[in-house]
Amino acid sequence: MFGNRVEGLALTLPAAVFAAALFLLPVGILLSEAFRTPEGWSLGAYWDFFASPRNRTVFWRSLALAAEVAAASAVIGYAAAYAIVSLPPKSRGRVFGLVILPLMISPVARTYAWLVILGRTGFVNQALVGMGILDTPLRILFSETAVFIGLLQLFLPLMIISLVSAMENMPRDAIPAARVLGANWAQVFLRVILPLTREGLVIGGTLVFTGSLTAYITPAILGGSKVLMLETLLYQRVAVANDFVSASVIAMILIVMSFSANLLLKRMASARRARA
Amino acid sequence: MSEFLSLEDLTLAYGGSVAVDRLNLAIRQGELIALLGPSGCGKTTTMRAIAGLLAPRSGTIRLDGKDITRVAPSRREVGLVFQSYALFPHLSVFENVAFGLRLRKEPDLAARVAEGLATVGLSDFADRAPAALSGGQQQRVALARSLVMNPKVLLLDEPLSNLDARLRLEMRMELQRVQRETGVTMVFVTHDQAEALALADRIVVMRGGAIEQVGTPEQIWTEPASGFVADFVGFETILPDPETGGALAWRPAAVTLGSGPHSGVIRGASFAGAHREYVLDTPLGVVKAETPASAPPLAPGAEVAFDLPRERAVRLASA
Ligand SMILES: Nc1ncnc2c1ncn2[C@@H]1O[C@H](COP(=O)(O)OP(=O)(O)OP(=O)(O)O)[C@@H](O)[C@H]1O
Ligand SMILES: [Mg+2]
Image (cartoon, rainbow over all chains, first blue to last red; front, side, top):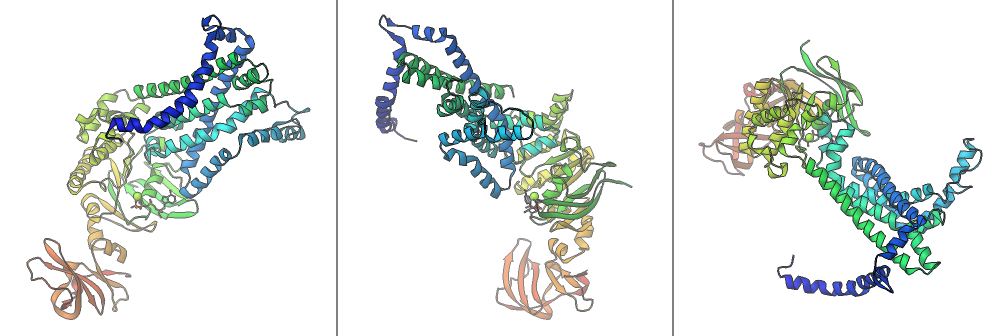
């Protein structure tokens, strides 16, 4: 865009200085905390962190839940996105608005709504007991299931938005063309829709995975201390135990996992392209 | 019965709005049919229904003796070349043509694709991406992609509309050649009457979701059944006939300019190469006429005598 590189660099300089001074530097100091010991630099803090079975449980649980939420939102997201792009333009706008609506509501309010729905005396239990399916209310809250449901509801719109815009960029009639050429719906999806929307899937998947991994409010409210996630564990280490070293380790893990997720998804997408 | 593809009382709708209303049409094996009509008359809609992409509200579609009304598009053995080509941008030309064959697990894949590409003259382009082809080449890939499947019926939605005049002529001959060589039954959509006349065995003229006339190019050209069809094939002057209560229609060339019992004022004049075209305001209505280019030009605003010879008109039941 800039004919002159120097000019371009000069223009980005203020933002770069700002980001470096107020973001990168503090983050660097925080993250380096875990490597600094009285005896010098070491990876000991990471050893200690993963030596604890509870920490390992929290690590794997966070990873698995975020991956599950991302996978579930991809499945639901594709169905929803296809339904939305198949609508006539007028209702498409309206339905798309409904998808975006939850994003404008505070996650705290959205998560508390789940307490009302999933609680002992919430809708779900009342309905199940009322219909005689259950004798006693089910304990849904403060379980991984509750956190999964909460995170899925929280981040699904991001997946749907990414996939809708990817599908809108597909050539018109690509899907009917594949069907006329003999593809069943599974083949249409694998051979046409998936390859043509993989950028959207990578973006949506990264957003949902990273979002689920780093969400604090939802696991805190719906999982509590029973279902600790990395994010809630981090808060606990700092607020309860004043343990900044563990907090720094967790922060580093979260950053590494977020970046790895994005790289992995991109890699998977381009591997598929190379084979095609 | 020799009919191969038949549409019986076919009604097609999008939500509440009916796009095609109780359409009946029978097509013989190996025929080349043109679906001719103005924009929005339901040509694409009819094609989509034959291909199985749109479930009819009512009516029956029969192909080769079987009722295929409820058969999935993937099992109909109908090919469809889309108006927008609908090539797969993530696949090479080769893979686009191979798409359907792969799904069928065709053993002779490479040879069949090569044959298909040769048919449309694109053998050297197998490794290209569709984005690196011209519009006409993309269209030919789309044609090859459908042809290699050996469909019972090949539907082409405005196969020539996005091409320039020269390519159009080339593709026209290409289509005819492919049809001759393969003997495939073809239905192609167009809103260009010249194209329909030049290519088709029979022409189906559609208007507002219904069939206006079905006939050979000669029939459509010389005996249009209605004012609408007459206008479509160039009978540009249509006037009520007081003798029969019907109407009479003339082509511009059938109107005599310079002498005759009527007179009118020239509103517009244009030079069209081989002839000059005139639009006349007359007490009878608007009359369109033409003279050979060698005749002296008439200026707009001039008053001119003309004749509408009855023997050169076609009779229509109504205007
Ligand atoms: N997806 C759709 N939803 C609602 N109405 C539609 C849809 N597609 C077409 N129509 C309507 O159905 C009618 C027939 O449309 P169709 O596309 O079959 O026309 P066409 O003859 O192919 O026109 P053109 O020559 O412009 O391609 C039109 O009135 C059109 O507005
Ligand atoms: Mg059309």
